[in-house]
Length: 288
Ligand code: NAP
Picture 1: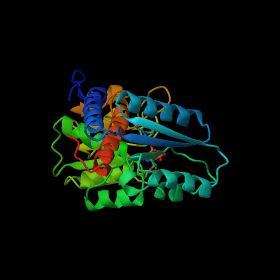
Picture 2 (picture 1 turned 60 degrees about the horizontal axis):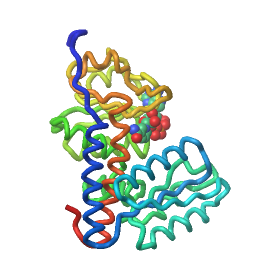
Picture 3 (picture 1 turned 120 degrees about the horizontal axis):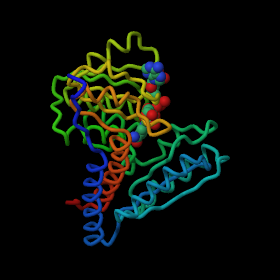
């Protein structure tokens, strides 16, 4: 690859828009056929500014797609039992089809206990052990939204995954670990890297498909991108900067996600799609 080579961009904004249009059409159809619109409940603990913004964005996008948004705001001082009770009530409420607990929830709360209070059929954010296990077994269920969005992007751009070597840098429960599992389910050979990995650069250089999910600006150097590799940058750091050094990587990759406008928009699109799917299943009718 030469300095004049430019990778093709994987446009997450455009794909997310198309997915959301499909979700909106399905939501409208569900309302017409059943008299009920899909409903996503968001649960926010405390007033962390970033979390407040994320929840506001998700609610606004829901409403634009014809998904009813129910919001539960709890004080930062809420106990694990209080949070579990609030989520449990939403799990039992037939008018609620999907539940999203915005995290982090605060150090004094048992986050896992709170997530597990979400009924599996309403776990549209893919955070429960049930969803994680179903994904691991390759069984139907809701996937973690950002990993699900990454797979949709790769499919949209016709990336042939079978037999390829993917290197996933990062192993968080919501991003790195599940994206590797989804790739494994597609017959990819997956290598995970993390903060204790020795010789990261030489491993990254072997990647046919690189997924960067670290949370460190420009952590992956362009020189480490194998010529022709597909580069997915899930990182989103202050200043709209990804985990990959885009300006150098774009001269070596065949396909690359920009930051912003790559992986980011896909997360909410998958959340909305899974909410409509959950509503369709709970209303015992099939969304087209
Ligand atoms: P996280 O929970 O902090 O996990 C970061 C991962 O990177 C960990 O597995 C960590 O390894 C690994 N890591 C840290 N330093 C490393 C190093 N020097 N070398 C190799 N690996 C290293 O972060 P996250 O929630 O997965 O998020 C990662 C990035 O994705 C962030 O920029 C975040 O903003 C972005 N993100 C975007 C979306 C979206 O919607 N687009 C959604 C979620 C996250 P250890 O496990 O060993 O600590």
